[in-house]
Image (cartoon, rainbow, N blue to C red; front, top):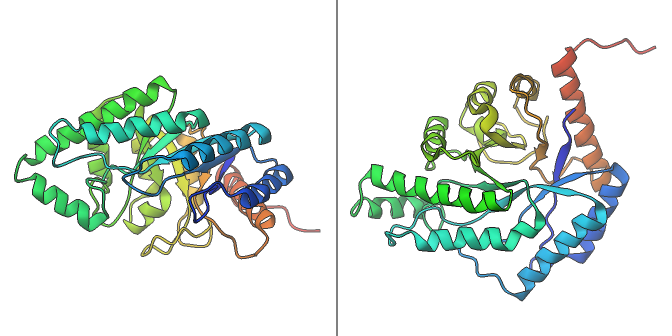
Amino acid sequence: MRECSIHLNFKNENGLFNKERAKQYREVIQKLNIKYINTKWNDELFFIPNENDFSGINKIRQFCIDNDVTITSFHFNGPIFDKDDATQSFCRRLMKQSIDLYHILKPQVMVVHPGALSLGRFSDHKQAYSKALKTYNADQIHQMIVENIRYFGDIAQEKEIKIALENIFGGRFYSQIDDLVKLVNDINHPNVGYCFDCGHGNIDKVSHPEVIRIMNDKLFELHLHDNFGDKDLHLPIGLGTINYVEIIKALNEINYTSTATFEFFRWPIDNRVEGIKNAIELWQVLEKIAQEGYNTNEWK
């Protein structure tokens, strides 16, 4: 069975490493024998690290060493295109800054939102794209994005970190699977692949098994959470409408051996340890059903 990677957030509201939360995480890891985690640090698209950031990242690194856990994935928050810079040096500087700052955590994958075309939100990305069309045509913009992410793949590869482009939802740039596949194919880099977010796919009404088969050996990361097909609720698996048994069957078909990355942050009980334990056990049951079917022995 695949190992589960649980989401931990080490940063408090003041931008500092949260010592109390780290103690709680340590208890979870020790009691449940957790080996893999996923996390992030900066939420800002334009981010200049300060002493607190360097200190926080080093404390996360020490936490991983002390607790013998591996970071499976880390989020890159930053633009992948700059309409005002023909050289794209600003975007590339933020990409390099991210690798330089976070590589000491040794994440297996850096997850990227490929539709971030500005420093703002979705509406800002659309405005930036419209303004960019006054200078470049659509193919030129696409090619600049391709070259930026190819550069990201190069510098990440030097640190043995893969770049995984995540499907978003709701008409965002490169959120449609066909568009995302074309982007990855055009980048054509061995170190750049996909992060398939099953919750986002549910909102866009995709066939999860079909998408997994399309991504195949380029599927570097898998985000697991649930919803009812309308809002990005990040519910625990099994509490929405996603058929995870069919997803697991498709993962087995492509011989996906990486972790099952939990991207939900709660369970319907207050105790964190018991909640995560229940989530892991549910995933293991779903894996068993996908492998062996729904047949069970009657209780005696």
